[in-house]
Length: 177
Image (cartoon, rainbow, N blue to C red):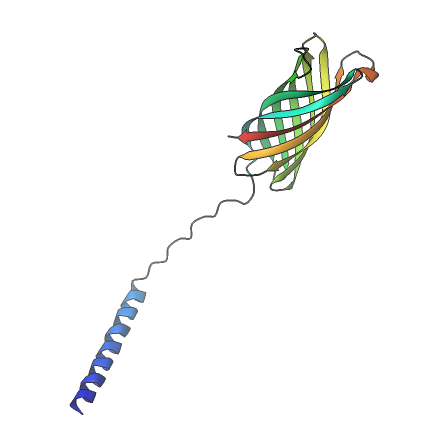
């Protein structure tokens, strides 16, 4: 019987002390701020550079190209993206030909990670002609700072007959800094 009384006294003391500790903890409780979550989606504003490959079809035949670009995007509200870009390409047909362009882009974010855009630019061909290009593209964010994009643009020498223009298709990847 003495053991039963000791056990009951120990249980009562433990319950009383545990309750006191819990009450003290609650009186000294200080809520902590929840850390801010990063915004969902890709950050399209800022500098980027990238490389691409593709091809185009001239009257004399189709051949491949390689090139690269560098640019800067500006956010216009939540969904519109405007940008400036310089790009250059090299012909893989043995001619040593090249083209360079200064472009403007305007796009719309279909989702936070998908940009559909139009591009327009003026440039120069290695043969000396002044060119313009008009095109459309789609760019997809695949990581926090890498995108892939596909673009189709018509290139035309200024002052030349429209029939001498050609379509350039490219697929590339960019690193957004």
